[in-house]
Amino acid sequence: MKDINEVIKDYVDFNKNTPEKMRELKKSTGKKMIGWTCNFVPTELIMAAGMVPVRILSRPYSITLAETSLQSFACNVSRSYLDQLLKGQLDYLDGVVTPKVCDPLQCAHDIQQRHDCCSYSHFVQMPAELESAPSKVWWENDVMLFKKSLEDFSGNEITERDMKQAISVSNTTRRLLRQLYQLRKESSPPLYGYQVLQVVLAGMIAPTEEYNQKLEKLLKDLSEVQKIPESKVRLMVIGSTIDFTEMELLEEFEKTEGVFVTDDMCTGSRWIHREVETSKDPFAAILDRYHYAGFCAAKYPGGIRFENIKKLAKDYKVQGAVVILEKFCDPFGFATPDTEKMLKESGIPALMIESAEVGALGQARTRAQGFFEMIKGV
Image (cartoon, rainbow, N blue to C red; front, side, top):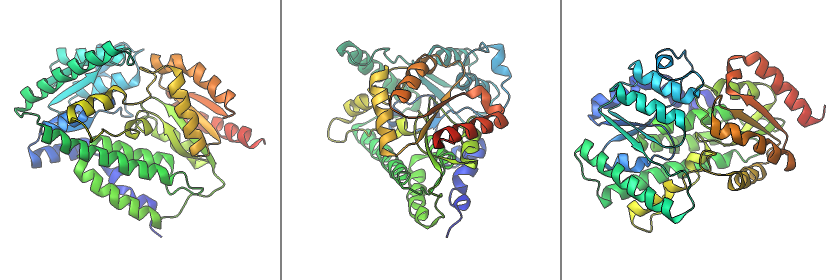
């Protein structure tokens, strides 16, 4: 049997030492790196321009410089993104692109522009409403401007061939990660939820081709690891961007009686759920995929989101749901009461935790234990 900690060691080390790893990569390849902040950014276009897309994720450390420019009641995601840029911790990035999904993220983007943190900065004017014909025209025009800005900055024309290659590589990532998720349907999954999160987050940062090779090896290695006991309570986690800041919270639930077998979050299933069509014009296919990039509360009403959550709960035989609310995240904050109501009506026990509680892990552990007792009817 292989030790699971050794199997995923490369992913954990990469996530822990991301700045150093990315600086080394930049030096060895000479490629420009573009930070992206949300799943609605068409990263295939960045790749097609000969640059490396790198997800900017929040980190569990004290936010200081961002406090001087962005209000403290903005979400941790926006504040951490800005703080890292202002402190030079993302100095390997040549640019940043942010879509219109919420006010704090837009404010953080505007502030970093004024501080001239990067050589390239672009704001994608994502339409507020996605279903109408005018919104699709708006989206096409705006992504065309984004494509042109990438060409101007990189000095490379984005050709149809380049887009097809980027689509192929990105679709492979999504397909391999969905295979990893399929293994979590087993009565004894090979990975805990916080371990899967390490793998997924690395895929949002690392160069795609190299990541895919390691992911193929991981899928083979998982057949030889010690499986998680069937007695664990099967959980799903629901939230927005759950990353390094909340990882310890997932681990606390899994240290006791639970195991997260699936999720509905932007750093999880919503990132990998849909591929780019390969049977039509690549630019049109990219437009279509990112117009419906994921069931995010910032863009989707409850109906379609809730149907997706209920389907996930059924497919993965979920016994309980943990809703992690990013503090000061308005889109998910407004959606939380309806989410809890939907889970209750669906017969899925639910526990809501605000991300601010992550620092109080002892309290989280106590709440987790009470939640498991409720599920088991103790």
